[in-house]
Image (tube, rainbow, N blue to C red; front, side, top):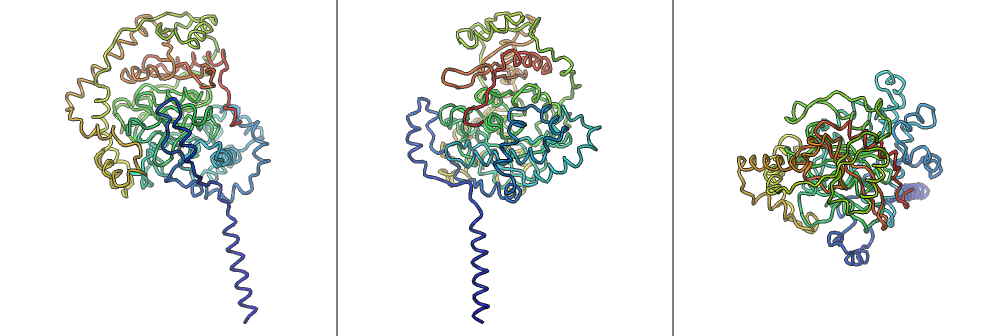
Length: 551
């Protein structure tokens, strides 16, 4: 009997030890001193109240990959770096064709890399909110089916097998869609957004969801860019806690810059793709409103909202855009266009392009130097002094659109377990635990509730804003320009109300190391033209470089 009891005790201890041996890669730490030091930052928006998420447990997020990553070593990771880091989609697809790479190992590489950096207390970026628990299984299936799919999908310029990250306001079937808000934490069982369906139809792997400015930065007003109650404070890899991430697609920009995926999808109402793309030295497209469907995406404004691709280069951006195209009958703004012959037109030259330069921006030395490079490359430069315009009513437009658009999303697109039905419900929910749920307040949401502007009055405001935006950009048509050149997200609001596309391309780095980008503004449905100019500029300057601590 004693021998049996001893055996049972030994077995119990063995299994208990085995359970304790499960490594906890992500550990919370006392950030008090770190936050105190942050209060000395010159920008008030960078004086964080918290950095680590008080809600998310990344050990749980990585639990489904425990077994697979246990057999993927640091040696495996190092051996794949030269094949993967900073490579464009055509290069990755060629490596797969040659047998140097598989979609499974590509996926494991990114998962390993995310865990490697995000679990390091001196390097984490808080860019990831959720991961697709089935992504390795799906990657294996892509490897098996690749030969059968090759006739249907030309793999060199395809998203087939490419791990893509989504901003966490875009619905997916097997991951929560939270918009960074704890009020949507139970939004776990949804249908794929229209653009996610398109990505999957074209063979893309949805790797996971990324952090964002909560409610796409139309929530707390004074809170830092890239903060959400679910994900914590997103940090810029070019200067952790030094440079802003841009917003609201902060996690999308940061994760692409840090090579945590092939590419990411962001969303923009006014600057939410151009801003983080600029701050993180990546290529971002804010398409013509309606080119990409908004169905299944947490809204701010049905007038202005659009998703868009964020990538390390122009070619990937084009490939990703094409993988999401299609007319959506459930989106009244959706339209369909024929895919352009972008690849056939890639001459890599700026000769003959008519480009508008905004005179007030020429005081920026980097912009002025860049314009000279473009002029010397053969482009015709037309200097523009834009007219004065009124932007009155912009906040009202967003207030009234979100007051009505968010309840529609909550009624049609969320999990039945989500109890909130309106902006007011979110405010009340957060007040029950404001330290956890809204530490920076929620004054923009309060402004939505208090705004009594009527639908008719809002319609007039929309018309006036669109007219003013087009007046500011009238040189595009009057001077027959291919594009107007801006900096970062300086004119994103104007492009937004005009519903014109913008393409942001890395331009340079300031003396501090902070990225700065050139933003091209074009007429509606001229994305192909913007890509051709952007590609030529990219080849001329070859500006983008990886953040030094994430190589």
